[in-house]
Image 1: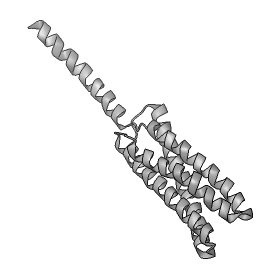
Image 2: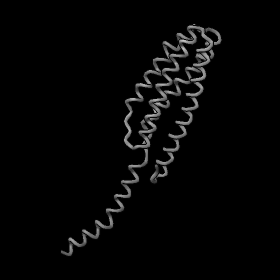
Image 3: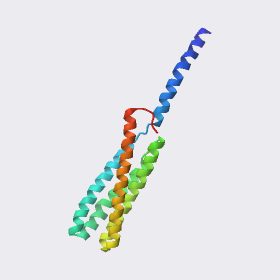
Image 4: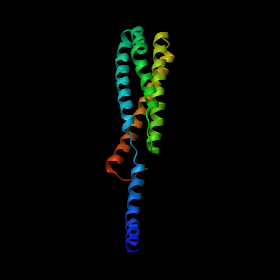
Length: 159
């Protein structure tokens, strides 16, 4: 009887601590699976900068580069983003945003290629405007991921 009472006391002491640790651990977003997608998007942006410079000299070559090099990479990155798995709600929200942004990047690359091929100044302005907006959205996304990473390093409960 005394041993059973001792186990109950131990459980009363240990159980709340364990539940607290598990509860906090479950709320800290693991954003590491998103980082390869972010790095790949950065490489797509670097290619876009090269295409921008080429477009000033040779719009046809720039459109070809977009279709043959940049678009396939942007498409592959958007597809890879959909395959990422995260479990924590905050990480899931970040993941959903990353999927949206990488799809937008892919669509914007296609629009840019069409604009260069058609030499349509209005479509080109639209493509460049979308690209600038997308870059700003990606900057905000990266800030949100960094905030989630800081929450991981602190190791406390975060929302």
